[in-house]
Image 1 (cartoon, rainbow, N blue to C red):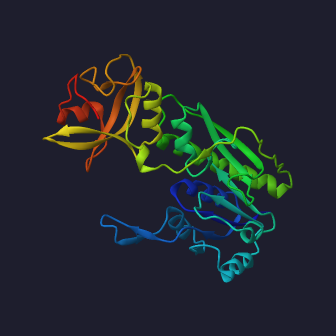
Image 2: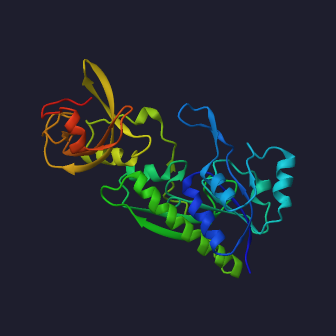
Image 3: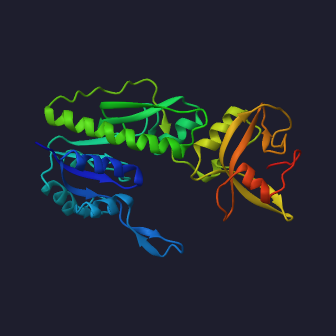
Length: 311
């Protein structure tokens, strides 16, 4: 036996789950994903989402509605007569007509240990807050924001220097396994649902550009968490005087270091910078328009001696 599934997802994060469900022998009736968006070097070419591209390679029908307000769009969804919808980072709010549009409802793979970090940016917010662990949770969706009852949990440790990009990849694969397990248990009629606790709710708001600049006056732990929580995208940054004008430099890696001094001042010639208390070492940097470079390679082309101020 296998389930008749509608898959709903958009970014690369969703692709391993789609592939694992196919490999498990389930019938993927349709894939729903965000419409093609302008992209390419000049931003003029319409680019299909990673899930869209994966679905085409798997020869699965793809649908790209802008929303589900249209009655005909809802009828088309229901016409698939699916057992269940699997949702992973789809990017659209689902109305009740869609949530209830399959035999067993919709199951979502969410990248946090709910109810902590409901919302748009759970991976980044967990690291920025200094959390030591997070995970993937499969929940049955309801009309609230990530409020549904939890079916399967897969915990993932957050390493001391782990970036959001590295955690993203770990969760991506953990989530695929968790969803595959959930679908096996759903098919067997053995998928218990546990309501989320009312205590410990935190919301992971979308990262705003205004919070990406590094504030070296903060504690070193906060600075380090801020840097790795925004790496590789959108990237935490500071400004540096180069050729008489300020230039933005992204920091894509850091580690805690020994030392103290005026916040924002380099304490050594190998990029140890003082914070409000303590210090961090910058380990990976990128100039505007340049490639990401390890600290040693970055310093070959940029002279940054001890005493330099980073703003």
